[in-house]
Length: 556
Image (cartoon, rainbow, N blue to C red; front, side, top):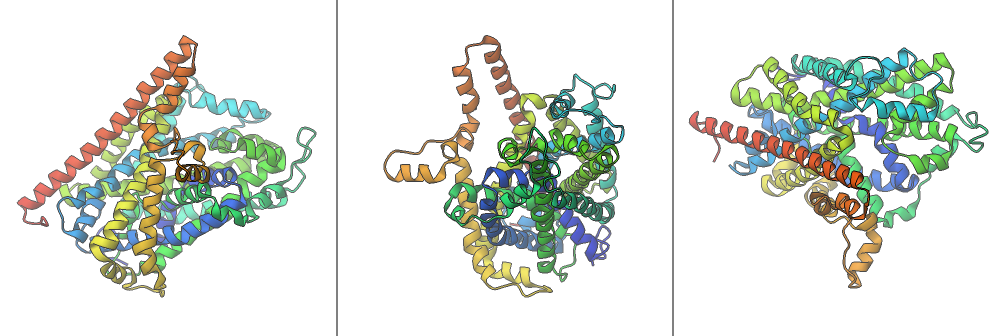
C-alpha cells in the first residue's frame, strides 16, 4: 500500500473502510422498505441488474478517478476532476463532492445519534412492557426536543452533539483512525446482523398470536425472495431499484474518490471496487432482507408489514418485537440491532468528512486536526435545524436535495465527464491498470453508453416524475395525446411546494392552514442553508484556484 504520510495501512483496511462507506443505514432502513413497496420479489431482478450495469460501473469510475487524482496529489473531487480534464469550469462539478457530504452528514449523524440513544434505552429497560403504540409514541417524543425521555434537557440535541464529537475525534486521527474503526465496526456489524438474521430464519409461526393468528416469518421471506418476472416491464420498479443503488453504494458523493486518492498509482482498484461492492450487497440483500421484514411478519403478519412498511419501523416497531423474546434476549437483540445500525452509520459518516479534510489540506495546508474540527463545527451549525425542527420537515428537505437529487446530478455529470471528456480509452486503461482481476470488456461499452443513459433517465425521471409514480400509465397517456401529469414528488413540483399548497387550498381550519404555511417557511429556510453551503464551497474552490495560479500550479 501507499507510503504517504496519511495512507491506508493495509488492503484489508481499505476494503473494509470502502465497504463501511457503502454499508450504511440505508442497507437496513431503506432497502427492505423499498423492496416491500415495490412488490417484494418484483424488486429483486431490476435491483440486481441495476447493480451490475450502473452500480459496478460507478464504482469503477470513482475508484479509478480517485486514484488518478491522488497520483498528482489531489484528494478532493474538484481537483481530482481538474486533474482529469484540465479545464477551469469542469472542476466546479466537483463542488458536489464536498457539498453533498457536508449536507448529508448534517442530518445523517442525527439518525446515527438515534441508534446511540436506543442502545442506551435498551440497556436501561425503557421499552420493557411497552405496547407497540407506546414504542411508536416514544420515538415521536424523542424527536420533539421539548420533551425528554431520560430527564436530560434537550436529550435529542445532547445525543446529537455526543455523536458529532465522536465522529470528529476519529476524523482528527486521519485515514488511520477511520481504518481502525472499519476493522472493528464492520466485523461487529456482520456479527450482529447474523445473530438477528438467524432469528429471522428460525422464527417461523412461533410469533403468531390471537391478534395476528396468521403471522409467519416465512411469508416475509417468500415475499422478498420470490422473483416476479413481469416486474421487468414496470418502469416504477426500475426507477426505485436504480435510486436505491445510490443509497446503497454511496456513489455520487465524492467519498470513494477521496478514499481511492490515498492508494498508490499501481495498486489494484478493480478487485477492490468489486470486493467492496459485493460485500455491501451481501450485507444489504442477504442480512438486510433477513431481519426487519421476516421478524415483523413473524409477529404482525405480512399484510401488516405491507401496509405499514416505512423508515420508522426500525425505531417504532423493532423494540416492541424484541420484547416478545423475553427481557434478557430483548436486551441482546436491541443492542445487536441498534449497535449494527450505529456501526453502519459511523463508518459512512466518517467517510463524509474526508473530502472536506482532503480539500482544505491540499489547497490551504490545514492539518488533520483543524480539518476535522472545522468539519464538525459546520455539521453542528447545519445539523441543529434538522434536530430542532425535525417535525417541521427540515430533516426531510435536506434528505431530498442533498441525499437524493445531488447524488443523481453528480453521478450523471461525472460519468459523462469520465466516459466522453476524459475519454473511455484513457478511462479503461486507468480501471484495468494494476488490476488483480480480468475486467470483462463488456464494461467498456456499459460505462460509455449504458450507465450514462440510465443516469440521464433517472435524473429526468426525478425531474418529471408522473402522478402517483405511475410510469406505465403516464407513458401510455402521453403517447395517446392526453398529456403528462406531474406528481407532487417531482423536482419541478417540489420546488414550488405544490403538495403543501394543495393541502392549504383544501384546508378549512385556520390553525392547519397556519401550520402548513409555517412548514413552507421552514423548508425555504432549509433550502437557503443548503444553497448558502453550495455557494460557500464554490467560493473556496475559486479561491483555491486563484491560489494555485499565483503559485504556478493551476491548469488551463
